[in-house]
Length: 86
Image (tube, rainbow, N blue to C red):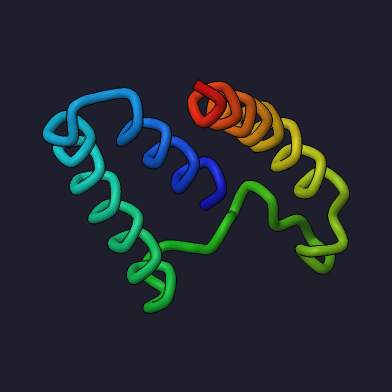
């Protein structure tokens, strides 16, 4: 969710709103659809990260999320700082 919100906000600052909303609406619908299907047990929740133990005591889960989310968050924060300082 961090990358979703950050990239949408950066997109609204950098690009035409029409372009951002054309990509935002299908991505949001897909996100809600996946969440709803996971809630109703139609699709399993995070089957890649669920090993035969407790799923949240898995260091792989935390490490992989930080590996993919941290660069997006840092780059968005730097870009916001540059845009707001102008």
